[in-house]
Length: 136
Image (cartoon, rainbow, N blue to C red; front, top):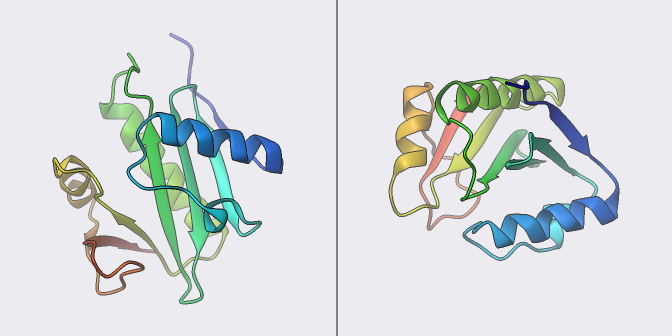
């Protein structure tokens, strides 16, 4: 089996295309200018995962991920590799910590984040959502 690769996407037109794909894959909110402004960093992980990070004034970085709902790739080990890489990128951009919310209705993301050591956060970019933090 071919090893999946990470790829940073920085060309504005390609970032907009990834944003459109994220919406098609069911990202749970409408993406806007704040998602693709120059301070946001976009990546692909193989052909079926898109993620991006936005550093906040507080020093934390918000992490957004979306996976192709029709992907046949196994989730387990690859998800762990994805989140270890996200933590590494957080270190590179000198984030105080990483923030993510479980915007699914299943609680699957929150459960996985907690297994990786993320905890519920007082820092909440959107107060109506529950956010999890991984301090770096």
